[in-house]
Image 1: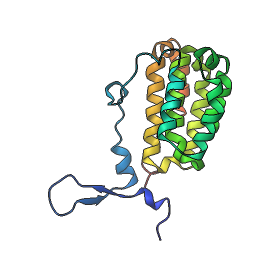
Image 2: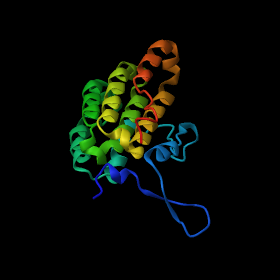
Image 3: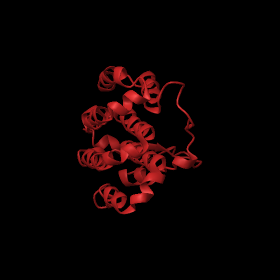
Length: 197
């Protein structure tokens, strides 16, 4: 009987002509197919948040329409009163960040994509003030990977997409302390091929 861990090895659509429309892909092959390029992404990147709003609030409202997972809805209801304006977000940045990383768990897998996108949006609002959060974020992402996300290519892609956006938004602040950035980034170590079978 197939388990959840076996479900990761699914059939993929074969794009070549012929009768064999589906071929089996291993976890490693699926991970190799991941392509992250935040500079040439098809997702539209807003230059400015909605008037009187913030990138975080706009993202929160957008994901409320797209995600109905119980964990995310409870997060939405808890956060909405304290993220109405950018000054409120700046005032409550520690609480917001703590609530976000507390939800980076495999048991809330349906909420992971919006939470990771919200972390990136928060970094875009906070800019330089987000830098002290990077080590905690890296620790949380590593913990998430060690607790089962390393077997899910979609989650791996979401993690590195979020991390890539954060690096893009903060690049002009990060180059000032490249040594510390490399230490933080080293925590997101690459899993060797032997680990992914």
